[in-house]
Image (tube, rainbow, N blue to C red; front, side, top):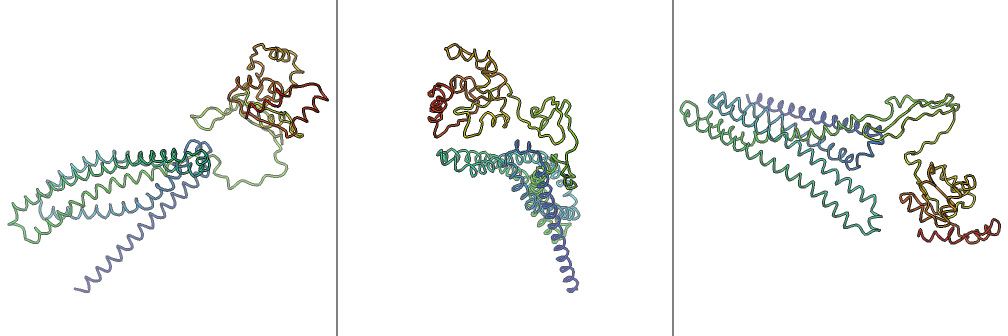
Length: 440
């Protein structure tokens, strides 16, 4: 008899070990698979996703959410299944010995379901809010580390500390609410279970003469274990829902729409004579998402084979975006050609005055002190160099305050002007060169 009990105990230990090992291995494999799928999905995510989501939010998915799935969710579900079946077996034993206990058990089940229905959705929303308030902490920390040089140079350490403390306060406020809600549910669950035990003890006092002492002692012992067990199971069910929020957030990133084709591995090396065909865009419009503005609008273009095409922002085509101040040529490089190559063309140059007499007359009137509309003069140009920038820098900069300034100077600027005066004619050095002092 003793040998059979030993064999049964050994068998139960082996089965328990196999069950635990198989469960945790399967959870580990699942968590690793979710991590790899999310990582591969982010590698193929469009650039718009990273522009609209801060780095802290992405780091939060790989740190806190993956940790919740890999550690907390695994332990919570394991203990939930174990405690749930323990409570079911306890209730079955008590009901078989004392059938009157089925009445309070039904009432307890109804009240527990009611408490859980009120508690679970609220705590799940608070959990989501807690995850959202945690993301700014990572974002602020990452930004502070990357910009620590600028922060120290401007002496803004205290400002960054205050902002980081504000992020911590917001997260702590939500986390404290979550703890308070947990205590709220625990108090009500303990009150219900205590009432159930009181009813059970009262029923035992009425029927103790018809029950053996061993059964009465087991009923009382198991009933007292229900106080913590039922509360523990209710909290575990809510914890499972809370941790499943992390799984939901990870799956949200896994389901991101990739930017490139899934057959990227099947691409072949292009031959040297590619391309041999042209491309025609007929009324093409493009935007990065359904809510973002159009990047390309009604584009009609024909691209010849092996032809290089440059695309740039044309939203401000009639708006002066760059003001070339200083000398229009450094060594043998032309600032006008450089700006047009970068997509800030057409560029207004002094030669434009000779090709268009009407514009020359307008600038002459400006020299005489007449009020001139520079928006009208610069209409259709994306940048300007040389004259009239050298003569009307203040007026042009006032008309286009958002334009970028490109200042080009020479170490031997005075000698250059002296050579220019001797070759071409007199020119105002004060207007053309030393106006750079105004920029400084």
